[in-house]
Amino acid sequence: MADFPAEIYRSPRAWVESRANLVRWAEMPHGGHFEAPELLLKDVRAFFRSQRAGSGA
Image 1: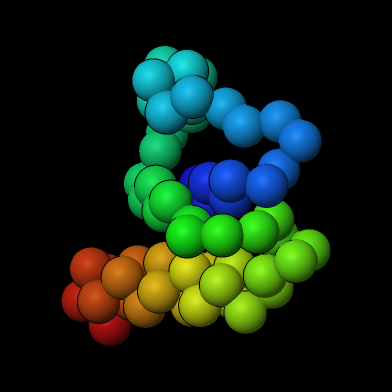
Image 2 (image 1 turned 180 degrees about the horizontal axis):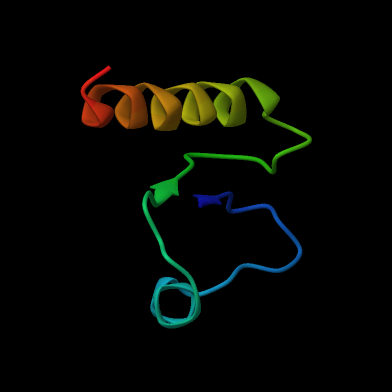
């Protein structure tokens, strides 16, 4: 979950944790996913890096 402060709707972390298998929570410093796509891309890459590292591959 990438939590951007400028999104129209922001889900509280506790709500997300109670309804989904939350693997990663990242609070972005500014913007929304359209205003700061580089932050979203960086977070997506970090997520997949962590998944590869944890898989033993």
